[in-house]
Image (cartoon, rainbow, N blue to C red; front, side, top):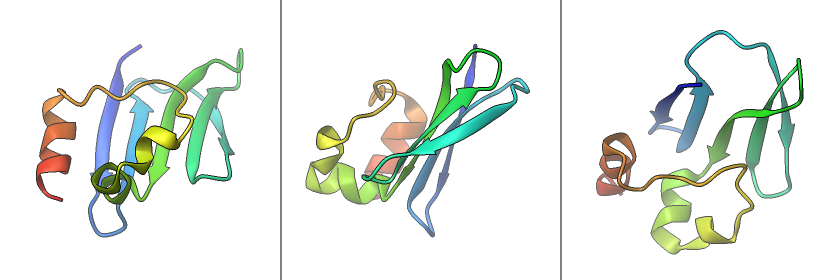
Length: 84
């Protein structure tokens, strides 16, 4: 499965979604992290993180339970972080 990374700078939201069409539903935790799960088998297919850049800047992103790890060496993620 390949993922598409999009960032909404205005609202500071990171979207990590499957590139191909996969029907999914969303579960939000108390920390503003939304886990996207496949309808077919409940597997994790993506995530949405509110206040992403703010959390990276103040170090609180590490305190969130993310559905999968973030590759901070990814060029798109590095660009987001550089814009903080």
